[in-house]
Length: 141
Image (tube, rainbow, N blue to C red; front, top):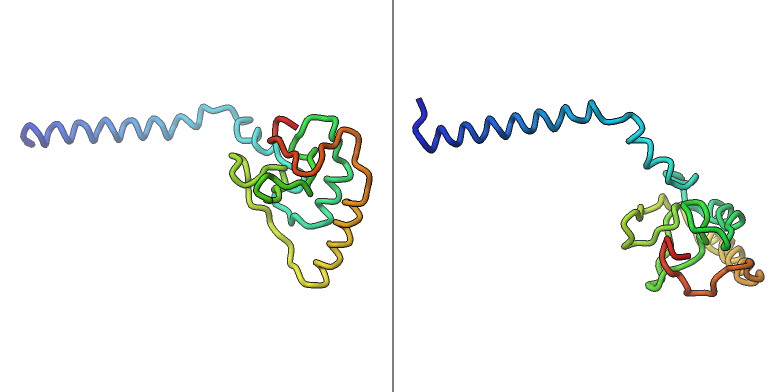
């Protein structure tokens, strides 16, 4: 039979094992929809290559007058540090930022993308569009 300190240690370990078993089985009682909530709040380009065509699609459907959402943001906007956003419009350092899947690149591809960037920069701003460098956070704009 274990002595005083050993007996206390065994009781503590039994309680700890019991708590772990109860915590593990508690997930069986969680509502089934709890796991789906996160997917409802993600961009249509989540887990896809975040290339110039995807950015153009988001940009063309962007409505600056509407609240910023995972599919309603300017994908060509940069934060104060010069970082680009992910597929959901979040920037590095923001809680929900997820490093996007980047496309293959080459000099020729970069030259073609430069033409797209020049076209967007030359276009008149959309009504309600903030000026360059006016990123104010995900929920502010």
